[in-house]
Length: 329
Image (cartoon, rainbow, N blue to C red):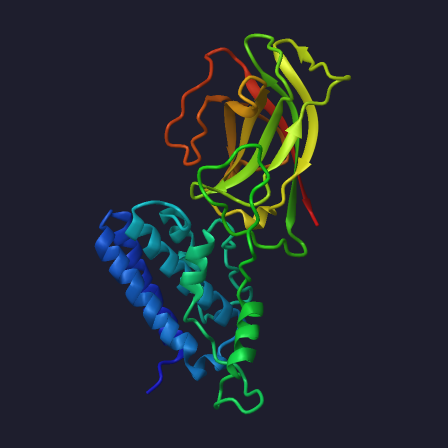
């Protein structure tokens, strides 16, 4: 006898809480086994024709939850937090609990898979082929293979070809997947006002490279904010190099995973070495992205994309000053 959707939801929720507890306690192997077992069970149900009777919202959320489980297993197997972290998994508790519940307002999935490495996302989403209504001469309950593939590409956020990040120097890790911004998404505009240095230095072509970093990987779409100056002379004022540059992040707020951060790397050109060099860097966590002025501490190079080793550039009160505007598009 086929389990009812409400019974499935309760069973999955219980299994998820058990797996999450193991993950929180640091029992990595046990947590991974539990996540994998639940992901397999959910995939079987998603591929079953009975899932056609589910509400479309429950179908979509169930698929994203199964993908999240697989992505977490990959992170646990590697022993890193690249892609889906424990904090991300804790956020999904409410989504599991709300599955197949007759609620006046459906629980939205809390994040996109923007910060997930391309290869991981493709691997995690493979094998989940939700049945479709009959099309042409296909088997009962399923679309023809080529049509089903097209439908799947439209259902799951398509993983685009990721171009090389726009940056003056090679980055240590490949870029993560970038999902297209949706209508009604929150656009993030950043104005770089000034950056503090203890000495007034003659920098050649100073710039601040702004990028979104998730799971230790730079997302596609890094932007350079250049110093706005008169002629070729850079402008210092009260131990601060003035910028006055405005940029708009390629990623919307909704496309940035919890736990990710916006990085700011101050770079300048070294004539003798014929390359750009990073002097210092700063970051602002996703949870702190709010409209208004922000004053960020400056850290010594090299840039630590995982924010594990932070060393202040100076004990003097010198910071990076920015302003942020959050607007719906």
